[in-house]
Amino acid sequence: MNKCVVNGTVTFQQTPCPSGQVRNPPSIEELNAAEKMKRAAQAAKQTTQPHATSPSGSPAATVSGFTCDGRIHCSQMRSCAEAKYFLAHCPGVKMDGNRDGTPCEQQWCSR
Image (cartoon, rainbow, N blue to C red; front, side):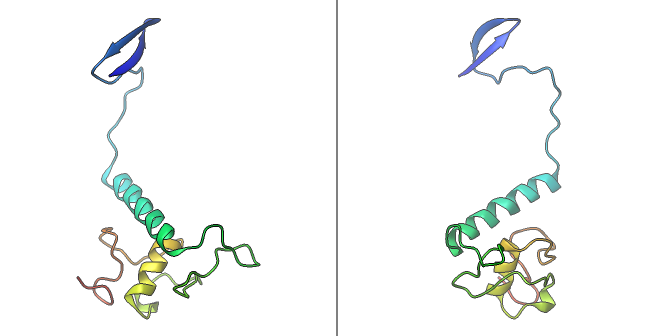
């Protein structure tokens, strides 16, 4: 049930309230980016300590021992676990070409 204000009158209806703006559906890229952010947030919750930072103010290394150090490609990784950490925690990585949330599928993280 939706509570809407239509022409200054409060109405209740099953359908969403009308708006004056036309809403375009999200693009595939926007949906993939949102899913990637959601997965990264979930991975961060599972692997990081809350509010842990190093003295420099950057995120602290997790129990996995990995830290963001500027590497962005699969050829620079040493394991699937390391690639997953970088994909979930580090900006600008280029390790998930098909945007399915699994990095380095040809080199390290084959299904």
